[in-house]
Length: 272
Image (cartoon, rainbow, N blue to C red; front, side, top):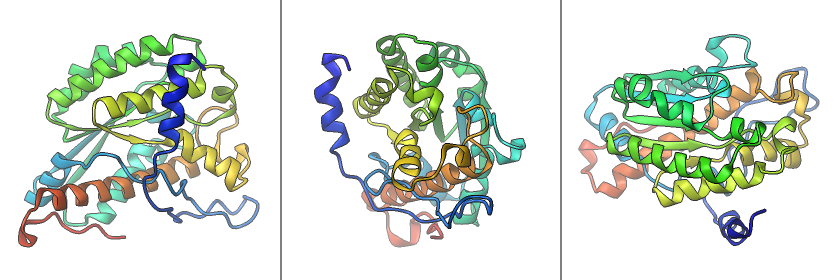
């Protein structure tokens, strides 16, 4: 690990966040009854989602744009309906049944940070999103690109997204054999964490969640990945969507509480 990252990484890994979730059973073909859950200290966003909360509180439609590469577009899923953005819309509508919620999938396979930045105006900001979920970093690692350059571009992208008034949540790379074999994989995860903290945006720790499945829950890679050893499958997309929906609902509820909104005006309570 580069010297300028080592102390940062240790500090970031020590930060506590929240409690564990036990939600979604594995397919019947899996060994044993293992549930969909994340590491207990990483199931809460660092930042409340203020715009998301305001839209829910006012009864206005909530538009979420999911931007990223192939694991956003849904490579490895059996259909587009099984991608994480599609599943997330279902999960959020279940938690906020009176709200009008759209989750738009703007994932494009093979893209790196600079590719996404080039289309932010036309495919992300043009939708006037209330919340942007930005999955990033995997392809830079896979192709041996500069993580330092990627960090600078991610910071630029976060500033542009925030300037639109949208809430922003970063999503880091997947924990998969073709990713973790790369020397810069952990550095990229640390740099994405640093970028989220520097720009005061949320971070969904996908890398840590998937590592938890494999290391702590002892779930084989082939159970939650497609045969290519890189992309997720229907179960893992659904699990990530469920965990992400819970974190979004909690962060929106927290934003309302932090704002001190009178009880009669609060956002609709999310179903557990």
